[in-house]
Length: 172
Image (cartoon, rainbow, N blue to C red; front, side, top):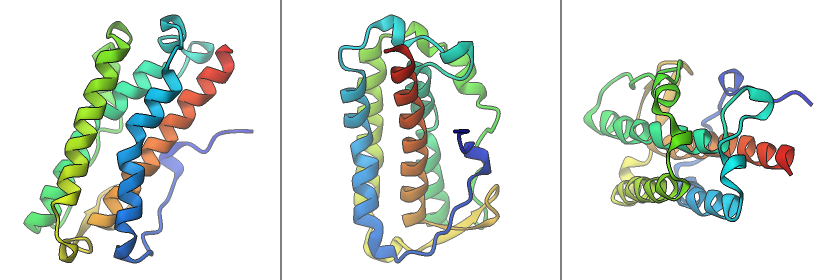
């Protein structure tokens, strides 16, 4: 079955802001899911690309790290009242140049856990009155609320975790 590319996905931000705590649990849980998935996997499988294309498992983890600044910056922009959010670098230059396959998996995992804990702490510091504040997302061409950042980020996490799982199955 062909995969649904990330860039073709659309999002409906039509749920109540009170979904925020549920979404925050998804954001919080990604490091543990990734750690469990790669535990005991040989390094050669973590750095291998399926059919020599796409990203390896380590590159997928590194990509999540590389984009960790984006939800934080977007939170700042919404709270500052900026009308338009920063656009992501859709060329993923940072990930392509980072050479995540040369890093130790333990370093990637611990950095991801630390960075994600900082994001969760930032989300948790916000009063409920901020959860519905929004700015315009440039690619999606619609308003994105604080609660939607948690949703969007967890969807992006799941997309890459699923790519990692596919790689593990292919190498089993």
